[in-house]
Length: 175
Image 1 (cartoon, helix red, strand yellow):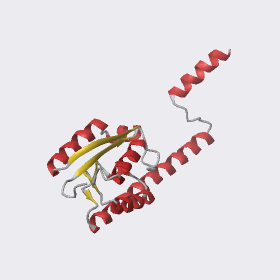
Image 2 (image 1 turned 90 degrees about the vertical axis):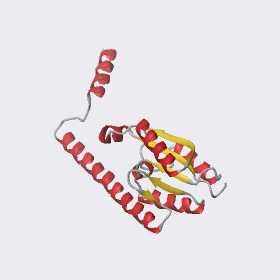
Image 3 (image 1 turned 135 degrees about the vertical axis):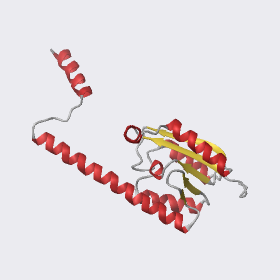
């Protein structure tokens, strides 16, 4: 690849919980990131989209894996995402990603978090954001488990209306 050109992969991801909690859709991310690429003078190689997939790990996201493969083939030298937590929420995965990015002379740019891994300070900042993001996931998980255990102990099954509806249909079908 010509090292003078800045060729970007635009990565967008949303899980159902993210969209409900934070209110940004794939379309909004795409629009914002295409504007950012135009502003920075990046040529967009491709838009990679993982819809309804968690950022808990990198290996179970097909578009993300395709993007990494294209990076290793020299097709891109920037990965542009809306926020760092769109890319990863795992400290372990981040360290692996930074290592691979460095190996293939590629940089991560996150619009909302003002992240850029092309400098030592940028890589430090990315690591700190990921530690906080992983902490958030672990705290939410602990609270959820605590709440479910409490509900079960008090005899309240944590079913939502969908489960109740399906249970009702099965009950009718059996009788």
